[in-house]
Each structure stands twice: as C-alpha cells, then as structure tokens.
Length: 200
Image 1: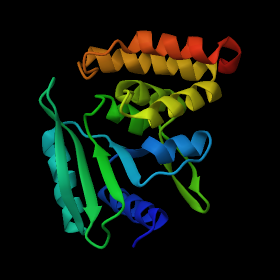
Image 2 (image 1 turned 90 degrees about the vertical axis):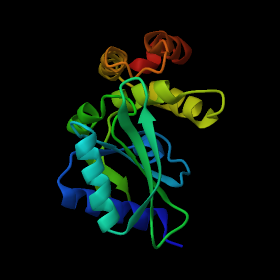
Image 3 (image 1 turned 60 degrees about the horizontal axis):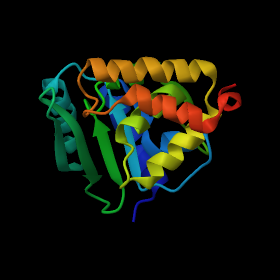
Image 4 (image 1 turned 135 degrees about the vertical axis):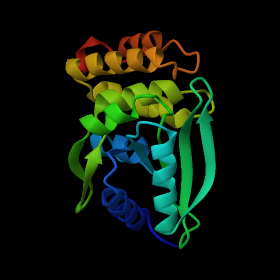
C-alpha cells in the first residue's frame, strides 16, 4: 500500500503541475502547526473561480491516475464543494479537494505559507487563522477530532491569528457557506475555553 508520505508527495507534484492555487489543509496542516497526529487523508483547499475550473482540475487529476470517488455540492450556493479522490495504485489514502466547502478556498490558498510538512517535504500550508475557521465550520459531535484540533490550534494562536479567524468566519458567513452555524459565537466560545493568555 502506498504510504501517506508517498501520496502527499505525488498529490503535491500533480497539483503543482496544474498551476492551480492550492494549500494543504486538514489533519496534515494541523500537525504542521501543532502536535502531529494520525491521518489517512491528504486535504487541499483549491482556489478556483467557478465549477468549470473545478471540473477541469478533476479531469486533469483523473488523467494523472486518480479516481473520483465522491463529489459533494455546496447546496446554499449551488457550487461543487468537495471531491474525494483516490490514486488508482492505492486503496487506502484519500485525497480530498475542497473547492467551495467553506467559500474561502481562494483566500486560504493565497495566504498559505510554504513550510516543512513532513521531514524533507515542504508545501504551501494553510495558516492557523484559516484552519481555525475551517474547523469551526466542520466541528460536530460526530467529529471529535475537530474539537481536539480546535483547542490545539486555539492554544497556539496569536492575537493576529484569532483576528484572522474572525475575518475568515465572517467571510464564510457572508458567502452563505456557514451551513446555518453561528461561527462568530463558536469562535468566541473557543477563545473563552482556551483563556486570554493562550492567545499571546
């Protein structure tokens, strides 16, 4: 079975070859900023203008040996939200491409910084502010890891990170991708939970 590292390196090279703005998000990105944790997914925010561009990315990835397993639509705005891919050579590692899941994927990709993600592997990785916003959006009782990640990210966040997270959740809400959630209130609750000194 292909390892997570091999899948990450392959997916990074393939996305780079397309020239489409992207950033690593999800568990790997959280691990790059705080405590490393186990994950079987390689998640990317992909910056596209519309579904035509998203579909072109998916077509090109299929040409490179990926299979599209599932596609999820962002019903509030009628956009392609997420596509789950696997490599034809591997049945274990999932590659998730987020196009309009949060509505701020272009901003996430544009603001990402290149850092070492795994030993010897560098990539453009979403910042703490955007990761907090994304985790607030996906947090639910059925996803306990999101709550753990949120606390870890919150404790590592600077005041600037928290201000950036506030701007991000407002943008998500403005773009109607908030899934009916009160994201600002959720951010306030996180800040209260981690305490004022944690935000440095």
